[in-house]
Every structure is written in structure tokens, then in C-alpha cells.
Picture 1 (cartoon, rainbow, N blue to C red):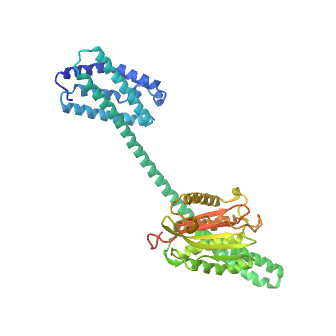
Picture 2: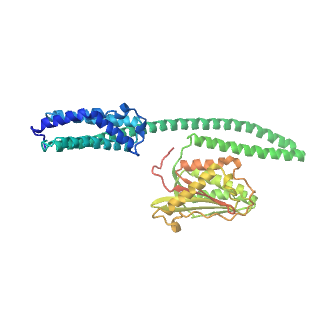
Amino acid sequence: MHDSIPTKPALAALARHLAARRNVILRNWQRSVELDPELTTSSGLSRAQFNDHIPQVLDAFERRLQAQDPVEKELAFEDQKASAAEHGLHRWQQGYHQRETIREWGHLHYWVLYELEEYALANAGLHSTVMPIARRALVRLCGEGVCESAASYERLQRTEAASRVRELASALQQLQQLERQRAETWREAAHDLRGSVGVISSASTLLAREAQQDPRRASASQALERSVASLRALLTDLIVLARLEAGEERRQLAPFDAAALLREYCESVRPLAQQRELFLEADGPQSLPVEGDSVKVRRIAQNLILNALHVTTRGGVRVQWAERSVSGTQQWLLCVQDTGPGFQDRSATTPLERALQQATTEAHEVEAGTPGADAATSGSAPAPTLRSQSEPDSASHTSGEGIGLSIVKRLCELLDASLELETAPGTGTTFRVIFPRTYLHPATQG
């Protein structure tokens, strides 16, 4: 319904009345907000801070009522929206939650409507169209006020979120740079130390030749040679780990037979198992064609198998491989089980081992709820641990400061593989690695 000519003077009079009652409206509004138990932020504001841009909003509302043509009405309406948006911005800066700002608009709506109703009662001869026009204008005023305030909040939240993302990205970039620098420093230090170890190794070889005639010196020389060999292996692992952490390693993807690779490696270390009077079983399909980085897969198997042989004093190690499909995703598994002492005290394990155990538990929960995963046929069920045959204190799971396990974890990340750990007191330890059967881009990748 358009404003008719007879109603214009009445609407103008109403606008002048609202302007005269402005302070009363604002006081009643503030008082009702103060009495609202869900609105507490306003209590710390002065009257001027509380009123904020609402007087300008009411000015625009009154101009809207007095407007003589559509252009004036639209200008007044645009001023309303601009002032409401500014009000939302200031409420954000004053620490309001969005819900508080919207409730305040509700209180303002109530008190302006109250003034309209009181004016209508005091002026019984008003044209029948005056109050409906005023009420519709008030509904539009408060509706747009809520929308503009909410829009201001949304824009500010997006800006703040984008700023936080940029800060986090910058912090992450700096952290990665520090990690690369730290890894490079470790690599250089380990490389220098390995050079020094080479000198010591040469010297120990000369001492061993001279000590052949003296049994006591021969024993000491052999102990020195073992220590030098152990230190050389440790430094080599440090260099490898440093390269992985610095992002200097790249994966070279190509087809290979995982079964042939694992069976060949098990045969190469079988003499070591026999020397320690341990069994070493290799079990899996005769052929398992996959795609991946065969060198890094071999390194993963080497670290897990040698570690298993190291911690096991009686019994032995079982190496298994298999293929599986989960929800249409083709994968293959490598399991390394030992009859070592397991973890006797969870608090004594390394943070990396605890993280792997937690990740294993979560992975099993996800697999249990994944449709299309058949535990009986796909190999998704957890590999069982073997009964422990070693004494609880026969080996330390933290030997080498967990460098070998850290290398395995980093290599798994590089190959998009997951690493799981199963162990408990009285049982051995099982490591399970889940590799992709194929990759999306079978080319050299980092």
C-alpha cells in the first residue's frame, strides 16, 4: 500500500513526535537491556557508547516517515542500513556476541513500537493507514538492522579468520624452515663425526693387528671395533633421518614385486637370526606386484626386522605380506612380529611409540565402521601379536633413541603409508605398515 496524500502530514507529525521522544525511547531501551539476564556486555559501556549509531538509525527512520517521494524514502532507507552496519561493527569491537546484538535490536523494536501504540491511543482521529505504514516501516527498520549487524559480524569473522590463517601459515613456514635448518645442522654434524669415526676405525684396525699376540689387548681391540661399528651405524641413521626431516628425500615410484623384495631381504638376514638362535619366518603370496619406491620399502623392512631381531632373545621374528581392499581402495600390508618382551610399562615407551599405539587404536575404530571392509578376506583385521618368549628386561625398546623407528615413520609419511603398532605385556610386538597398491601419479615425487 502506497502512502496517500492525506496521510503524509500525519506521518510527518508522527515523525516529529518520535524525535521529541527520542531520549525517552533510548532510556527505556537501555533499561530493558540492563534488566535482560542474557545481556551482560553492555554493563561496562557509557550511555554514549551504548547508544552508538542507534540515534542515526532513528533519524533515518523518521526521515523515512516524512519522505515526500520514493527517492527520499530510499535514501533514508540506505542511511538506516549504513548506520545499522556501523552499529554491528562497533558492537563487535565492544566485545558483544552476535546473539547479544540481535537481542538488543529486539528490545529497541519493542520500545519504538510501544511509542507508536501510545501515539495511536492519544490520537484516535488518525487516518486508518497511518499506523500500518509506520509499523511496516518499523519492521523493515529492525529487520534490516538485524541483517546488517549480522553481516558486519560475518565480514569481521571472515577477516579475522583469514588473518589467523595467514599468521598460522607464516608460523608454519617459519617452523618448517627452522626444522630444515636443524636437520641440515644435524646432517652436517653427523657427517663430520662419521669422518672422524673413519679415522678411529682405521686406527683400531692397526691396533687389532698389533694386538694379535696379546689376548688382553685383542679383547679390548675387538670391543673398540664393535663400538666404532655401532657408532658408524648410528651416525648413518642420523644422516638419513636428518635428510628426511629436511625434506631432501624424494620418492621414486616404479612397479616392483614386494614379495620378491621381502623374501630376498629375509634370506639375507637369516644368518643373523640363526647366529642368535632365533627363527625368521617369511610368509606371504609368492608374487605381489605393487607400485612404489622399492629402495625405501626395503629400508622400512630392514629397520623393522633388525629391530625385532635386536629385542628378541628367545623365539624369533615372523615377516608377513598380503594384499587387501578397503572400500575399493587397493592396498598391501607388511607385518613384522616378534616374540620379544613387548612393552612392560606404557609410561616407559617413547612419545613416538605412544603416538603410534594411539594411531593404531583410532585406525582400527575407523576400519570397524567402514562399509565394504571385510576383515576376514581383506586383511583389515589387526595382525595378532605373538606370545612373548623373552625376559621382560632382555632388551630396551628405546635403544638408539628411537632413531630407527623415527626413520620408518618418516619413510611411511613419504610413501603415503600408515604405520601401526600392536603390543602388550606378555606378548611380543607387531608393526604393521599399510602401503597404497598404486599411486595417482606414478612418477618421481617429493
